[in-house]
Image 1: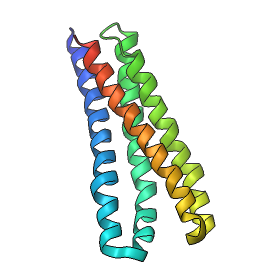
Image 2: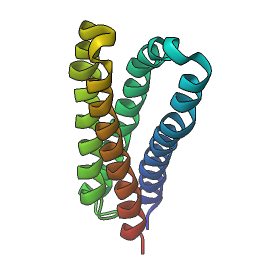
Image 3: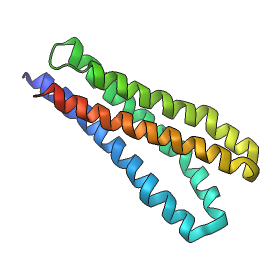
Length: 142
């Protein structure tokens, strides 16, 4: 594999790995701990984190998508599946950031539970897509 191909693989894999790590940390450590410690005020903290959390995922998703597309286009590796899965994650993060969060903010505490359930589902599907993208990158190299 060429130096370009290796570099693109590293960039795509690193972006997806960091993204997956951030999802796992926030979902299983950050948010639950915040709710355990702050009880009723936790929603305010998590709602303040959400825009940054989703923007971080969007940035990493676009980096992974770009590296996978370029890797695929140059013939360095088969990056099509990883690119598609990265875009799935980007779309889900975009929906959460620009549609779901404004709904949560407008609804206030009354509808938090409803929108929180949607957020959990979106986060879970995003996690699976990103993990699948990592598997696709690894499979493209063997």
